[in-house]
Image (cartoon, rainbow, N blue to C red; front, side):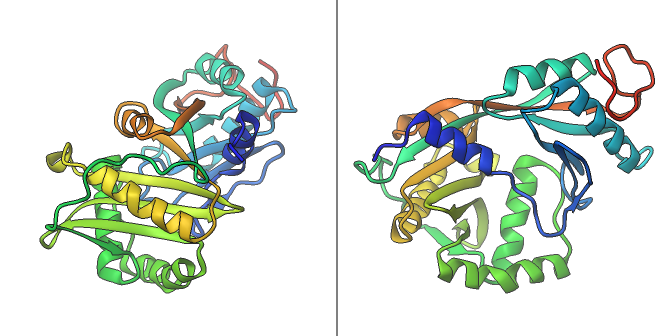
Length: 282
């Protein structure tokens, strides 16, 4: 059955990634996270409860984020305006000094329908490897850091990831795949299969190798895996400038956007700039 907009919205809302080594900051109605320092954005506000007053929730979350910030090191928190509540959340973040950081197209593909036209298959010089060993996993993290920013995790963190990756891949839960030209890693992408939905994430191609079909090659590999493990829908949150246009061309249907805002932590929360407190209203 073709996914409805409501199906896609529900799947998008359920998709909030929390890595094992992130620390949840306790709160009511919001979920700030403290990521490891090698992430591009160590502090993120990943979700809000749409049933509570948005302005008050944002103020609560910013108070908690300011308490977690390392002076001189972490000076902003990245806050997400998710599908379905994007306008109200965006207004509250902009009123508190937020600046648009990233815009993602939320797109879906019915995996029960005709297969997408992904163009020519990859040339023989492209090799794909799943991240089930330390060397390949480190290459995947390195490509991601080059494209998205941040740095790479420590060797013990990579080893801990690899210890789970093989079992997850075999069990149909997903994983990450790296594209190589010779011995050089040039692209990486991942997926996670949850409740029949293949969540496609982390599609990255190094700048020098864009335009040769590597993103589509990794997309095809992930869709083959998703179909082999009974996924009914592929869901992606693609950057509007890069992956979004490719995904539209191969048949993914847009269902709206999610946007992130970088909100400074150097001033107390609240649109007036006055000292804020948990639960303060805008």
